Image (cartoon, rainbow, N blue to C red; front, side):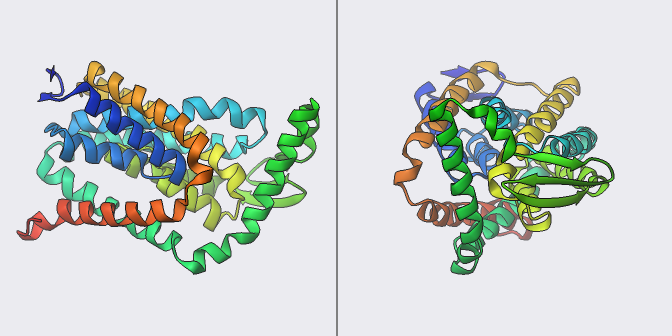
Length: 312
């Protein structure tokens, strides 16, 4: 089937299958959805227009935030003031990043090495997450997350979800220095610091045409020290805002989006997301991360090495 705007011929079934793969990996691993979307658009389906690829990548990263945000809000797993601070910084950053990228990274010969650099960075991060040191450091956090998850299930089964407010995110102080509790533990953060973090992450993610979860999640877990159980929801809400801003700005600057091409992929991503939610508990995510690390490392090198005259 010919897709005029994308400028390629592709099988709708292959688009659907790739979407399923992207949705499955993104939901299971929690990162690299936009990067995988970009790899598919550039290396598998052969799109040649960088400013078409970027917003099309970001459309695929919107599925999880749109589906997940209402659920996270209902379960009090979003730190709303943090998401707002990240989102406000993200709106500004997304405008800057997409404007910069649209003019300075409009050719594939400049965009691909830039994309490859961050693909390598993600590969290294995923590789680190496979090490025993990282896994051991996450054991206590995992126990806390599991305990909260079990409590949520218990309250749902008993029809007492109103009690969730007692153990979910609750703020004691909101301002430049903010304080909240979650599952009986207290957490503090600086709102201005979070705003500028959202700004920087959005500049990078919008210029790449990705969601930015690969930067937001480590920032909130490693720098701010927040539990993963509330980081996931907070990051998807921020991604929803910044990606929508970036897509709108790319389109306003003349980037063409092939809607028909995207529809097949989006259906696949939705299927992959649902499938992953049902089967991920039976599959070792560590092995998936190791495989993804190898693939992304190779792709990162493939996109970067032409800068020094090497092709692989």
